[in-house]
Amino acid sequence: MSTPVIQPAECLAKLKDGAWILTAIDDVLCVIFDGRNEEAAKRFINLKSEIDELEYSVLIDSDSRLNKVVSTVPSIAWDLMDTATKPLILLLSGGQQISKSLLNHAGQLAIRKVIDDTTVQWMRRWPIPLAAMPLIDEDGFPAGLVEEGEPVVLEAVDYILNLPDPNRTYVTKTIPIISLGAENEVKIVRS
Image 1 (tube, helix red, strand yellow):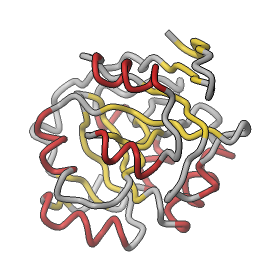
Image 2 (cartoon, helix red, strand yellow):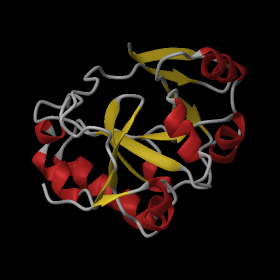
Image 3 (cartoon, one colour):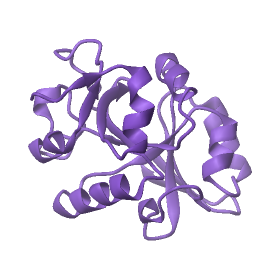
């Protein structure tokens, strides 16, 4: 893979231009893109039509970022986000300031609380809603190594954000998903 490596200071401009960037978030290899950029979102939708296992979530590092991308946040969502000590994805209605093509069939937006302090620090310098999809292997599970990533996804990556150790094995567990309704209805989608 001969994809150019970039530093965090270079990412914002590249993301705003629609780039897909491979990095590690909460110890999981992910491809990130600007969730408002229609071209980047369409690239995801087109790739998802080829690889059904692809999924994404909008990364959340703070209450203010959550309020920017979701119009009405159920009270239970605040509790779950505030107490999460491991990555967690919530499906919430009322997605806003995001590409509409990233809403699911029920009109929900997938959001993911970021736990890793390093990721939180560089996210705070980027005033955009970041969408992230785990780099999956050919079986549809999160890849532990870059070279195990689905070749079609790796070919779509424009840049690599300085991975600390490209030969390191990353977490291969899927992240739990909980769907929340406006009236605090809870549905476990994946545990």
